[in-house]
Amino acid sequence: MLYTRLGSSQQKNLAQKSSKLNKKSIRWLVTLSSIPLFGIVTAFGIAPNTPYVDDIQIKNVVRDLSIPEIQPDTQSSQTFWQQADIRRGDTIASILNRLDISDQDSTDFLQAARGSKAMRQLRPGKTIQVQTSAEGELLALRYVFGDEQLFLMEKTDDEFKMTEQPLELDSQIHMKSGEISTSLFAATDSAGIPNSIAMQLTEIFASEIDFYRDLRQGDRFTVVYETLSNSGKRAKTGRVLAVEFVNKGKSHQAIYFKASNGADGYYTPDGESLRKDFLLSPLAFSRVSSGFSQARYHPILKEWRAHKGIDYAAPTGTPVRATATGIVQFSGSQRGYGNLIVLKHNGKFETAYGHLSRFAGGLSKGKRVNQGDVIGYVGATGMATGPHLHYELRVDGLQRDPTKVALPTAPPITKRDLLAFQKQTQSLSARLNIMRSIHYASLE
Image (cartoon, rainbow, N blue to C red):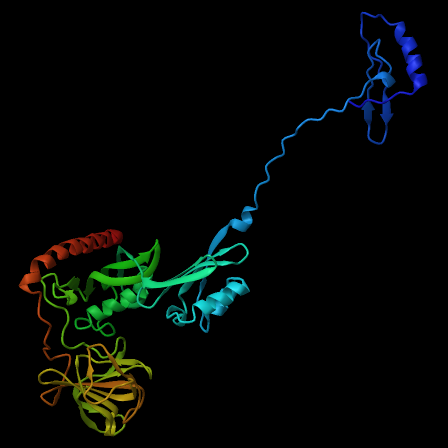
């Protein structure tokens, strides 16, 4: 309510009028003052026998009022985790700048980490994680590098403390299946299987299936594999634990097993090793442009003559693998072969690799190479009309058709490890059976 102080003459007239009023009743004299602009109505209430306004005593009242508590600025005390993917050509300095780390902290960190092995191994595609304050102060940094190593930096009392230690990983088991419609990698992509697992499939069955010539539409596969993670985030893809590949109606199964002596490999459910002394092909994926033949028309010599090897058409620079462990017997140029490598293997076997564009680094006569090692690269040197690999298998010095020679295999599971192998096989085979049943159910 809004009160308005009256002038002395107004007070006197009002007092005279109020004396005529009934003292037992209280009445209000209401003066309405209209203000057109805002439409506000003001009321004044005076009770009978009210003393003059000038006689009203005015007192100062002082009271303690509670002051609301001021909340601290929590924004400055908050911390944030953020990450950056390493790009080609990145340095740790450019990454810190991209993450808005303060100039002073960037300088101090670079000085402290100048001898770090991890900071010299920044691989494109990997991730660096940092913890910062709202002002860009660097509080912590994590980076997984090399062979499952963790680089960890934590800031304590304005000092960067760094450690490099093995990463603690948790294993998860995955089961996937797929069917070939166009290619192996198209099928594994469709099934959500990592490329590294697909490559392992080709290596496991490298002595059983030629994944370029032997694949058929409708071939199917079931795979059990592991992935490794740290703090709930996937760190890497592990190995294939069990796999079944049905190729041209024939089932091929493999179980991973590590023996008591530390040796590991893939075996059939019966304990027979899948590792043969010789791979079916020296190239992971290629097209056979010319097979082993006693009579083939030579495209350069323009005459019919024997072709005592297999030609694999592939782009220049395609890696060439040693099909078996052996010793380099020859490495150089040799007439129509062009750049040639000859490997001597145990017993009576030799392999030859011709028309190479170049040799693998460090390859020389007498050096030992393991099965699957890259020894050279596809080219068109010597008598060649285009880039391809000429591959020969020699038995007692004579060229033989690699697809028709019975090649030795690795020994089976030992009796000492047979019980442990059977126990592991039961568990993994059960997983394969589950996925096979799911696959068939989905086709119905």
